[in-house]
Length: 396
Image (tube, rainbow, N blue to C red; front, top):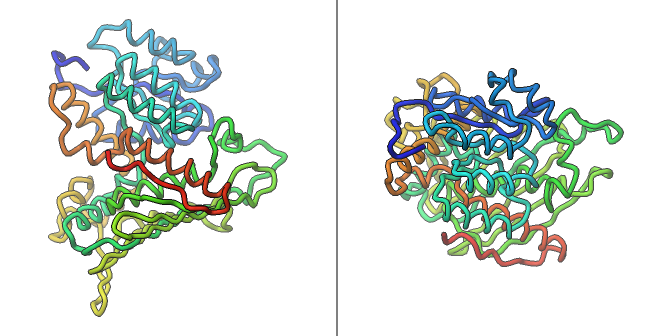
């Protein structure tokens, strides 16, 4: 978006990935447009040019902006008038493509929203951070769980000292979908997650463990200094982890424990976060996202319900709500909150303003670097039988 262009319009979106049986591309398209602040106008929806063009109509993309590959998209959109070209690119593709696609989009002058993990190597993550700084574009990493109203509520409560000194956290992310996978049949989606060349050095840890790590960092503000990890593959035909633990030593002596599983029978998407402070503890469940539980020794347990009109709802929690209390908000709305914060940052950028508080709300390129470093250090620790590894990123 040009500084001289009117801001009184919808942002124009290009989607990379998401065609066929893909899940997350549809989520990006829905979340980005949920608040009527963006429209999907262009895309490359598959790595196969014919399939990419063929899937465009399913997303409402006109044929002339249904591109066969990313180079064609970036060149085609760059040639359009400023008032017509896309403003941002959303990347919903396998992990190994994130770095080259984000790099190309940023260097072509477009803002980027990208799936996690940001890259498959720390070197690429740090390189991408440098590119974001050089280009001055907005980069948003779609850790959507940070968009839930009750997570925003918890974060502000912790920042205000409601829990006292944060002593520990436990983040458990349990799924069971791998128990139903036939090793002799290609799954309808996500087959690339079994390929180390595409998914990176970790599977479950990179897929869902990075969510757990980012959410704990986002809410508590604790900075890890060391990590010890044990990873395991219980599914014989998969070469990477499907279960694991990571223990974190943080500033001030605080501890963190992250457990991930994709082989726990009966679990769908059971992501829980528990935070212990010197004056109280908080607990949140992704499958019951509209509630936040506060406990204090000797006092009745308090359950905060998502309600923008309640006096106990703080400013951060209220700003993340769209509906009155009693009307559940969940995955799409949380994802849309990440997009909304990114859009606010894009407007500030277009006005030539310095980043405001929105920069602390949406997960950015530095969160991406941390997430990749977390994966690499956990893998290194596991390789050395759980030996403590230094965690030196987190001061930026």
